[in-house]
Length: 344
Ligand SMILES: NC(=O)c1ccc[n+]([C@@H]2O[C@H](COP(=O)([O-])OP(=O)(O)OC[C@H]3O[C@@H](n4cnc5c(N)ncnc54)[C@H](O)[C@@H]3O)[C@@H](O)[C@H]2O)c1
Image (cartoon, rainbow, N blue to C red):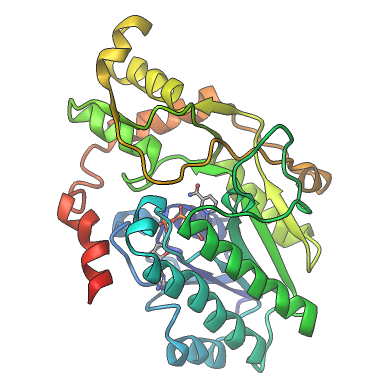
């Protein structure tokens, strides 16, 4: 079958990537969607079982840092669009093992950019999925796309460095890049190391929600369906060379988040909910919050459609309906694998 467009998604087996791949495969049967993913510990094959037999989907297991493989993909496939999501993403682990974050997030981006730029058939869009964490801690004013970058943890530093690389290909070659910076994204199928699925998994196992440190941390949360709509809109209408914040005005403290989830899962009153909370020591640097302004994306026509109440209801229900989804890999040794492999 002939396809109108070929889209390469890196990290397409991860949380956001798998939702993006499923959406692209279903919405654009005349586009070919290629997923390049190394299948790290945070992936489940079940995330993509809905698309694995579809004619317009193909999977390549491999490392985005491998120039032979990545060059071969651009040599043999006429890639029109790249969504680059492959990354090491767990902030805690980035303190324990910054070199792996540097390799995958920076070197991987460099390898992919160079291969895409050198390709005989050059992509018309290279969308780099970055994070609000590149701005560093928020103060009184929301960050817009021109705010200076001031990342404070190794994960965010590598994402910012990769952004500069991506940007340099626009500045030097007018290579058609777009950068997105989004708030925390949440929803079904997210691996259990991130805060919402971590709390839900602890509670399902009758364990307390662990809150790090005593500082009043808060986060903005964007539901996965709204994030996917934003990525598709940026592909369709985004201007090359531009950065788009992708955020929501909904902000919640981590303590209040725990209380809400406890009430939903354990069916207890507000006062009883604190029995399910435990305070533990904090990592070295934790940013208070990351407020961002998404007016530029809204000017393209994007609005978050899913309220927090609805998004978290769907998310909690999914984890309750799928208690064994992460069972195979939700073992402590899989999570601890990072620092061990870091030493080798
Ligand atoms: N989840 C969020 O809240 C959020 C917010 C803003 C930006 N982002 C960015 O979005 C992207 C996806 O995040 P996510 O939450 O889906 O993360 P995730 O950890 O669920 O997925 C990352 C994916 O990258 C793959 N990967 C890792 N190393 C690789 C390598 N060397 N080669 C090929 N694939 C590799 C993993 O196997 C996994 O499928 C990341 O770039 C992240 O920085 C995430």
